[in-house]
Image 1 (cartoon, rainbow, N blue to C red):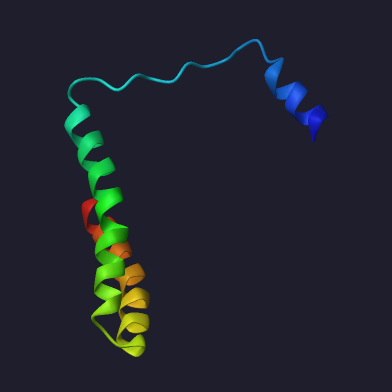
Image 2 (cartoon, rainbow, N blue to C red):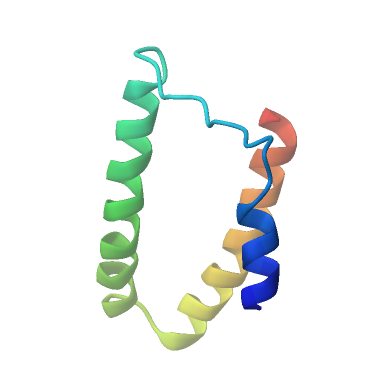
Length: 73
C-alpha cells in the first residue's frame, strides 16, 4: 500500500482542481445545508412512523432518486 502511495505521489503531471466560482457558490451552500438538514428530518420522521412504513419509504427513496436523476441529467 505504501509503495502504491509513493508511486502516485511522484507523478510529475499533477492536475489542479478547479476552484469554486461565485456562480457555483449558492448551489454549494445549498447542497451543504440540505445535506445537514436531511438526516435530521429523516430521524424526526422515523420517530413518527411505524417500522414497516419506514422500511418501505427508505427503499422507495432509492427508486425516486434514480428517476429524478434520469429526468434531470
